[in-house]
Length: 300
Image (cartoon, rainbow, N blue to C red):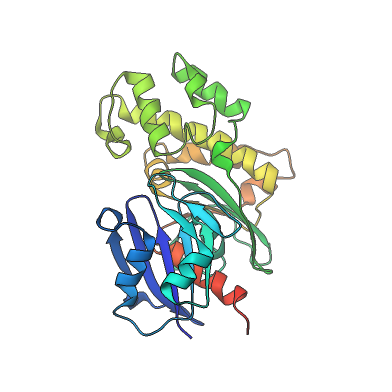
C-alpha cells in the first residue's frame, strides 16, 4: 500500500510517498504555500501525478488535537475527516510537527544525525526532540513502544535559570516570559532588537551589528533550558535538536554553551553528561516520522 506523508510549515510544504519500508526519497516534492488556498489543494496537485493512495499522515507546524489542527503562521485549518473525504483516502492522521520528529528519531540512521556529545546506549528507551525554528516545542518518545507524547512547551514560562540570563542581557525581560518568546525565530529577532535596537529577520541576526553577542545569549539560554528539560524527562536515549534556530546556535562559535550545563552537571551520578545529544540534519525527517506513525497506526 502507498501512503501520503506531508510536512506543512508556514511557508512551504514537503510531500512524499511512503510504504511499509518508509519514505520513498525520490518522490519528495516541495510546494510554496502562497500558491495554494489550502493544504487540500497542495495534496491534490501532488496526488494527480501518482497512483491511488490509501491514507495520509500530515505534520503541522501548529497545535493539533482531536483530528483538527491549524498552522501557527498561516490561516490554514485542518480537519482529518474532511481531508480524507476531499482526497478520497481511507484515513488522514494529523500530527504536530515535533510529534512527527519524535517518531522520526525512532527510525533515522547515522547520516541523518550529527552526534554532539554523550555516549549512545541502544537499550535506553526514552528520548526527546527539542525543536527551535519558527516556533519552539519538545516531544518525548518511548521508542520501543512507538509512543510519542505531544507537548506545547513553547507556551510554558521560562525557568529561573533562563530568566536570569535574559535579565542580564536586556533592560526589560518581561517580553521574554515564555520559551517561544525567546527561543524561536521571532523571539530570537526580538532578543536582538531588545539588546541592540536593530530590527532584522531571524536569519540576519548573525551578520547584523551585535548579532554574535545575541547568538551567545541565546546559546546560553538554550543550554540552561536543556539542563532543566533533561531532569524533567530523563531522555537517556538521547536529546535530538531540530530546526533552523537550533542549527544557528549549535553550529555557531558559541555552540558549546548549549551543552555546557548538561555536561557539567555531576549531581545525579554523572548520568546527565552521558546523555547523547544530536543535531538532526535531514530536512525530510518529519516525513520519516509521518511514515513511521502510519506504520504503527495502520491495521495489519
